[in-house]
Length: 89
Image (tube, rainbow, N blue to C red; front, side, top):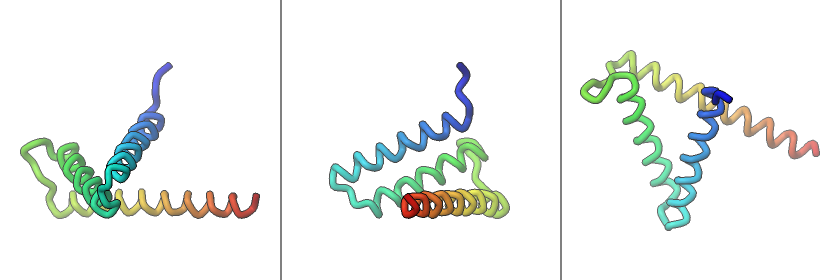
């Protein structure tokens, strides 16, 4: 059975969360873990878009920023819906 991008996305995201939780359990402050994850994501996004030797221009930064913004909005909406479902149960 072929794995969809959505399934890969979910599995990869969970691995990152598991790794972050492991770091937290080792005593690393969550604010440091969060900042490191954001930095790693920015580094990898730049690599994905521009390659090892390249960088993003201002319009590329704007596009990536908007993608992060949309992703955060989607996450927060899902959290609100989950909370409403739990309150309704």
